[in-house]
Length: 203
Image (tube, rainbow, N blue to C red; front, side, top):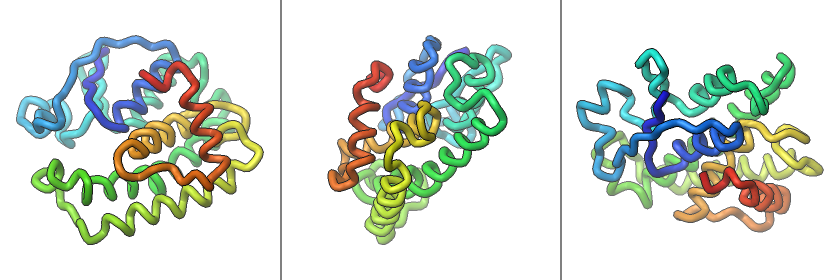
């Protein structure tokens, strides 16, 4: 297998997931700032034009970060980062979907439509007028998640899961760009420090 890697929160999620499992794969760097991911050679691999992408042993390409992580979980089940029972897996997927749709997606588009506009305006439909509202929507859901995490070490109670890795990959990246973590969200900030202390955080 080989991972097509680049800068940004999406590849970071997969790299952190791999690091937590002790998976090492060869990587090919894709220069997304130069738009290599939007050129014909890469589009033949991943027609969505996004990074990362996983080239599997048979040469086929798998994209979308949660799908890549699910596949790696099936290939390398220990340590489990999604779950070992149907109930654990369902709980992880529920929280992963909530975080992906309600926090990561509006946070990312808020960036693309504002600070990242110069990079993205010729690659996708951008709506600069929506940027502030999208960032605010992500913060609303972080406030909600902060309440849900009261008394928890991780998003799904006492176990590290894909939900944590997804949230950390995005929060940590955008905190360094233009969407800092609200320090009044004490459960989120404490969780973020615990995640940053893990060796995988620098993957």
